Length: 398
Image (cartoon, rainbow, N blue to C red; front, side, top):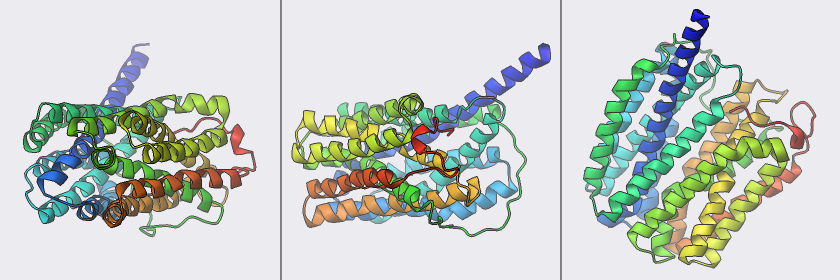
């Protein structure tokens, strides 16, 4: 009994420690996203220039993937996670003191690299902690990331409301994240690295998985476009004040967080296919509502629909892809992630280019088509990898 109590206590400690680093990742990223309008104004960037700036972060993230995989094969995920978290904190502070477009591009490139180091290492830790439990806890970790994103956006709103500069905002958050990192790193698992077999840096999906990959692409494109452009949309299209624009981002994050915590229950009740279809409908209708009626109340309502729509698409697609009979689970997830991150990488900058050429309302109207694309693709998916109708598949495990 004493040994059992010790094991339960140890598992709980590791679970809390891992959750803290999910929180650090979400809070750090949303802190940056919440102040994009302020930074855009301070550097006097137009929409096309901001699109180019935003391109730097996902490029850094993508190019660091093979490096992170190599580090995780040579060092424990705890060490990589420690470095990634500290690196992210330092770079967040540096974003606050950039005074030119070129400086911001360089810092955001490495900010993306730090985010990749932290993201892959915390998910590696999450898998290790999951093995200590008989039921799935990965969905909770992702929900905590979203909760942290909401918290970071809320703090950003308060900073804007009280007219606190980006430099002091980011410095305060950086110091806080650094302290939390050093305190809680001891409560994480010190895993031995597992050597990985040599494989291509980017693997493409087979013919069966291509629809899943395109759904992931569409969802991640919409999700990251909302991260980067939701507040800008309120300033440019709704003509809202800075505080209201930041509040729009907060509203979006609240909706996405709520959707992630309720996602498993909805899938259990309605089935994955139904939830995926409604996710696409919510994204499509939400963005069109914000475009057609660019007023504070209607645009906020649209952002709520989009947040709910994108909240669970990727975890559900990963769950289905893991059932593939033509590829291993790890290969299937890697291939789908590759396509998904292309959407994450390419689409948000093009929002800026289109907005500069025409208007940001046109940009969001085009992005709405990704919601329709999800609905169409889901209607064409008939079965999972085992030949079972996906509408009957239970909730995703991650």
